[in-house]
Length: 269
Image (cartoon, rainbow, N blue to C red; front, top):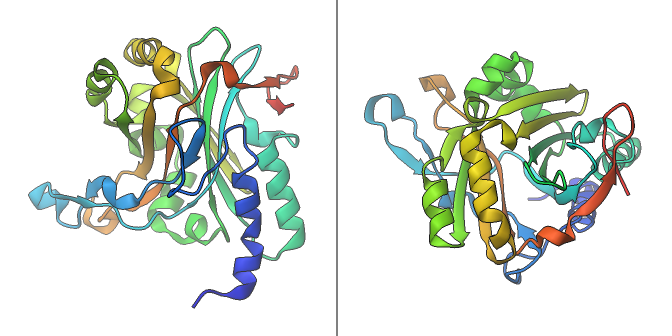
């Protein structure tokens, strides 16, 4: 049975989800334009408990993290270190929530820095509502405490073009499941209550080509992006999914501008 106190405390998540630059819509009523949802985990295939022997993959189970936000933003330079800045809307919500409740949420942010003239970023936020999974799950602890080399070797991205032109689907299929750090230059920023992964899409010629191909179709595309810490031995299997976002009909011209102060952290207007 759901804890009423926990339910009240987690109301902040629902408020935050609707306040990003792209609105969260109930999955049953999400239109094909300018919205995001969290798709069901079982549409993704992850390594099963016997993967070492059989290479069998199974449908994903419940996400470890809750979806918290989605931003489509742009700036005068590459946008980074969003969760280090007190004016970021997720940062503000996290600080306010921590001041009102005893639990200590832990936020994960995935920031795709796109190689566009407007320095666009697609940012997805997830939250461990009481910090337990981030502090107690053995593989997550290993990931958070590991060096960048370990993180690069374990953070896995799954991409599915639900709706879009054939040429984009074909191109993305080549990297539909990949270790992000083996594909893109990643920078990891860790704070007491967050981890942010800033991924330079322009660091890969292949991914740059995909962005240039897909950018003009963004307003008509629906895309799933899911995150997993790769399991490599029996103790780490079956894999558990961190979280996923499905975004639809993002208008390239509708990116929300941010101002970049001299120290490099992004401030949202």
